[in-house]
Length: 177
Image (cartoon, rainbow, N blue to C red; front, top):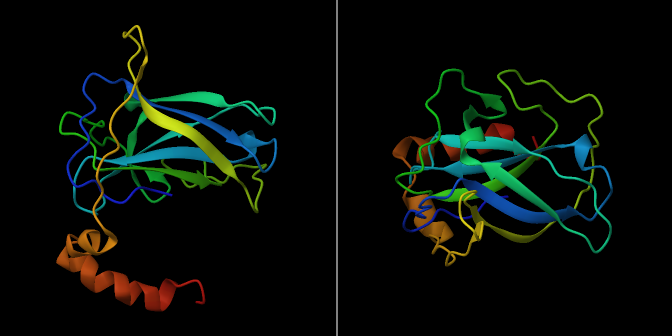
């Protein structure tokens, strides 16, 4: 899942990374899946996507895990693969999209499936998501929700190449195919 692209970049200031309060409501085995946070630092929907793995503990029914995902742990990826020698995430220009992925592939340069992956339905609940700064007394920063582009605006902003290739790729790689 991911947000629609932001109209204006989300300024992250002196933040050290993202935090979230979450829990896995469907089962008690979060370690049997690979959890990744994603972000974009460009307004285009091109291939510049950064990911960082995160983990959290199984909790009781009324408990939440607080997870920190430092900006320094994000790496440039193509699909499930990390790009070797890619530039580090640079958030000085702001962020244009945030998302999360659940995968059966370990985070790395190879597409290695985790041995004990748990397939099937899952329900990850998010209580909050935001930015943190380890040096601040109040480590969690509240920001106004960013304004997002409409689906139509996001599609109009796609590059001409994507506008041509995406409909063609759906012919060969759809759910039915």
